[in-house]
Length: 322
Image 1 (cartoon, one colour):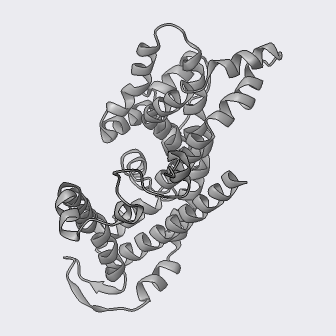
Image 2 (tube, helix red, strand yellow):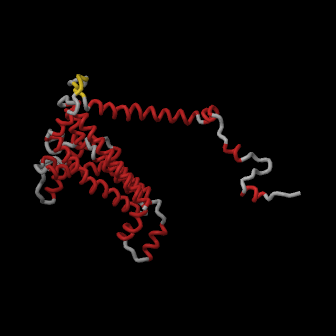
Image 3 (cartoon, one colour):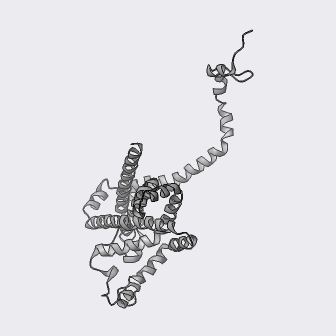
């Protein structure tokens, strides 16, 4: 009697002795059974979708609708205005001033707020002792309430002799500075960026440290055997190995700094030449009752950030594939 070799039978797709046929294995279970089996997963999914729907997607759509409406000082709708809110926004000089301040803030934040936490993490990663202490020291500012930290830095930046920085300058026999009261708006924005970097860099440092500790030590040992110094090791080993985290942090850094608000509110109170776009939204809505105009600015900012994020992710994916 002819016998069939088991391996040959599997290769030809024949069922094993006593096993189900391939068509039976691929047959889907009834819909009701699949729903009952994944009921808990569907419940969690519906909860997440509802949260996004109520707290994220509905406000976004409602904001777009408001940007085409006329609202009174109590926020009640009084009719449609078409594109008039956007036309008023374009012809408002304060809007373009806030755009310039936001772009300058973002550019300076890329130098300080993006590079400093990475370099600090690289330095901390080289320590062999007291790493926990230094991590806590770096992360402490994040635990401070943002407004409380901003008022602390207002004292640091006090223009008279009572301010911390001017006290240091006076001790070093250097001329004092006006800091936040300086007539140079770019310098004032720089002061805001330094505060923002100090108060937010703890989270970035911890993320970079977690990424750095995943780099195999053999790569550094091989680089040292090749005679690479610390800067070459950082450039040829650390940066390529943390490229994914660096790319992600760059995106989040730009999106976050484009929405800066606390610095303008607490440090300069939106004085001319220091108000960011989000502070302009707050000021139009609360001080001037221009809810439609503030909704128009918010919509423009949302569209710009969405286009930038989509383009950035597309380019990053193409570069990674190459």
